[in-house]
Image (cartoon, rainbow, N blue to C red; front, side):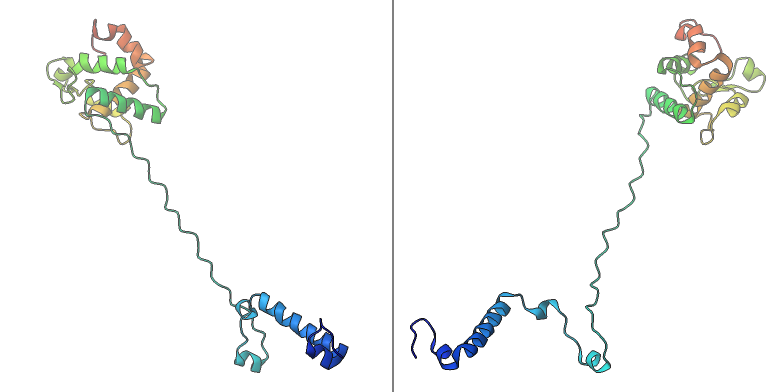
Length: 194
């Protein structure tokens, strides 16, 4: 029996054989279009088969995310080594400490009137000097007063910033602020000791 649309093997095997052949062909085609199972399923080793153990895919370690380095510490601002720089730094230190902060004008007037802006100035002729405690530094403080008002880490009387900080804190306690003291002395135009 010949049929123009059916292959010879179908005719030779009959309808039952043809169905089997079609199923085999479809299965082979399906396997060829599916990714290889060997790539997705790991092989079972002979020892696992012998011992009856089920083989599971080994966990592939996931690399840890790169460790983040800690943030760089903030660098303290660099202040110029000038009277204006010392004033800026002293004001920043007073702010950090929670102290009342005088104006730059009051700090500058005090430094210029007391020492002509010289951090190493020492007064050897006034009543304090005669009493054995000369006025020292940018704001001309005597050592006992400086020691009472200096902040920890800022205890060098000839350091211009330390001297200004202690002077401002002394004025806060005695005059209600350095601006009150400097204002009463005309910000340098009618200066007298403080």
